[in-house]
Image 1 (cartoon, rainbow, N blue to C red):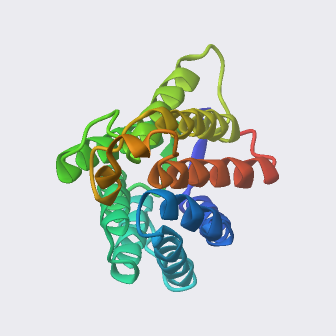
Image 2: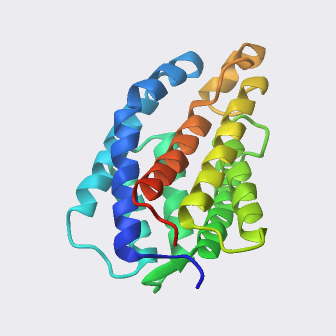
Length: 219
């Protein structure tokens, strides 16, 4: 049977991601201070605290509405450029899972593709511009590769592959010149510095993988 994540499992995973991200906010603040105004850590803290609070309330029965609700909570709590883009990705991806009480790993990859496409359109950015896209795209590529392997892949292995792909992508942004936002003002001086948004995405996938591995998830 293909690996499935039920609504309650997705909620628990998102709670773990929220805790992890808030605990790593200072690292993101430091990265952002090198390229921008250093407010990403505060955005992460406010947004993921809002997600954690939402998860303690009454939740929709299906995964799609759950993720959409969490995206709205993040957007309302953290109205920044990163907050707007990340929440849009969460809501757009969630819409692909509407009315599903459980989701497959293929569903996760499809949602990531939809989120990536939405961010390219909304953010008016492209791969290689030194943004969060440069972590999401290699994460998606790793997801597709994991699904294409012979034999069943566990959800933990699937998200670990995505996390490693995202981290490679985030690390590669050090060699890029920022093309968008406040970081673009630095021009060539932005080369050699990691994009904080891409690193934040890599951390989210890492947090998801760590949660599933801790659960002993081989399903």
